[in-house]
Image (cartoon, rainbow, N blue to C red; front, side):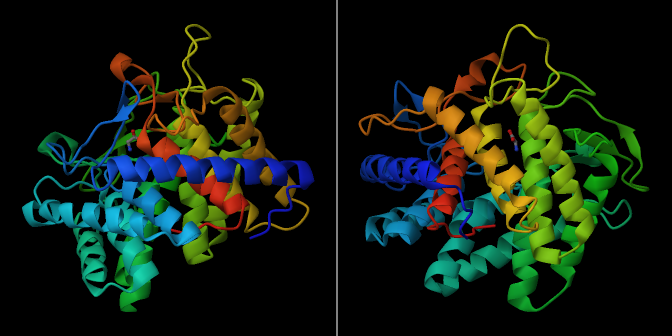
Length: 378
Ligand code: GLY
């Protein structure tokens, strides 16, 4: 879609797109079908060695499919296919799987199937979607995020980004059951996680028999009742995507409520997203991944609102992308990863202000949207 960003911004996004192409071409040559998560001394690690069911393992193939779609260069497809095949072992082993099968297979197999028609990829995507649907708790009406008896009633706002694989499966099979489960989860998150001011809980611990709230610990944010920025970004983009797939106005209204809260918090930190919008004023911890995901969410909302409302969301996306690019992007093609200053969790020192693969994924997706070369993976 043409977001009508004006000449100056258009020049900027075209320049950034050229830098992305240079950097990703070098990264693809070096990394191939390894599965990076973060960097050590400017070099990607490889989760395929001993962490194959790690939740972020779809983002590298997601980047590769975006680049294949944008440039047509076969090397991206070859590398992405290699990752997709490696991930088969997770489907076979099954017991390590969690709700993040959406992130893992939407970006790998489903992207492959939608771009190339590869039948084997379709089966992988349906297998992953069935696994997610199989987690559904019909008594409590929710999808538990993780495994283990003590977390059987835990939902997390991140799941809003996993349920698009259920909408895809329903479309693919012409079977409404998957989408019904996705909507039940979105409704539960809306009821339990989204607060009246547009902020969000990260974790809600629910009674597995009734779906009622028992507790809401702080999760990856500062503390219970605070406002973990990546969780707000998952909510913002996730509800906008649920609106795209269902047309249900309450999801768009929720996405807008979270977006307005997010924008208000970006304004007070020069559009560089804090790790938690309610963290203490010192020390200052940031999270670039929240900004990159939110930028995609703002652009998604802009696609579903009227002309008068659109500039608010497009402007927010441009401001956060430009602010982060100025301070936090590494364009050296000899070094892996573009966007620095990601943050795993407020209290996790070893994961603070590092590069994280989904920061790059969302940054690239946002720029590709702005140059009208994106492929909607979700
Ligand atoms: N989904 C886990 C995280 O955002 O860190």
